[in-house]
Image (cartoon, rainbow, N blue to C red; front, top):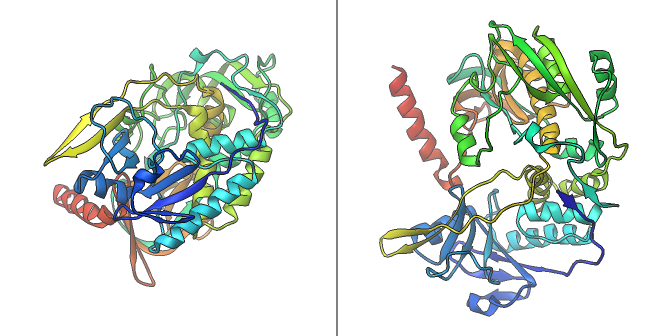
Length: 469
């Protein structure tokens, strides 16, 4: 993967917001007929996930493009004879984030997000596209990824860790806290020393690798690790023998305690970040280091990009603009990981939803080792916190975890995100409901619209309770 900095000023793109009834709100007034936008390539349109599902799936208006079953585009007209999704000016990018109740406010927040990007010479679009555009705008020199790193060493980043605690599913009552590592992936990218070549480390001793790690140098080790049987969770991920789509990865995450992907009581061999190997040492694993590689760059090539992301996050995650800036920063990891996925175009024909599948367009060779350095470091931090919490650890997902009867955060940069919680109904790290001492509750249910979460969780929870009897 090669990413070159912009050499010219980016064109100014106006934005439009599609309301729940399919109207287009633009910066220059309301346009009821989207055909007037068809040739306007200086406009980016956006709608919510709820809107895309309601209009395309329920009302049968227009058509939508899905990626791994999730809506990513909607437009008000159907083109059933076109196999590919051909861009038109009224195509709306689907936003998967909470929005405000007021449509005009949402439009103004999109304008604020656009202005932040434009002030940094970047352009709005999908969150991944905006993240990459911001990187190109802030790079000082060409970035050539994966120099000296054969792709076959690690064919795909193992990504985030998703795991239940020792107690598994159930209702938990007591002092409950959700701890969060702010901007974990984006912060790791912002500080990583990268942009040179990977070279073999001639002195792969723990002392030398610790020294490199303390300096922020990315280090991978090939090692043989014997993991003792008494652990609640294993420290190291077992990699897949082939590249997996997001759908395949989701299927393999349905192992609540993660013991298939993170085994215990066995010996495994593979390549991991040095930070993960250190976690293995910490819990009593026997480690034989077979080889090590380090990156030889002194540059923190993503530092200017990370500075711009922090500026955007300062708009506040209680606003749509701030949330979009946060998500833009998080999205860059996905651009370097480039996990494949399946696209589907759907439209309603009478009572039936018709589907067509665009041809798969080859993607760039991903910077797998860069993605894995970031993900591996975050997995190690999560595992260290899980280990510190012990039986008080309830659930973990990427850069966040739930604990019970714990007032102090785990060691590191953990901060409380949801405090004052006295009850947690935990079905999985992606499906739960929690109640506040002050009254009220919240529901997390990944993969569906916000308006459907409460009903979906209650149905799932009641089925779980019946099965647990």
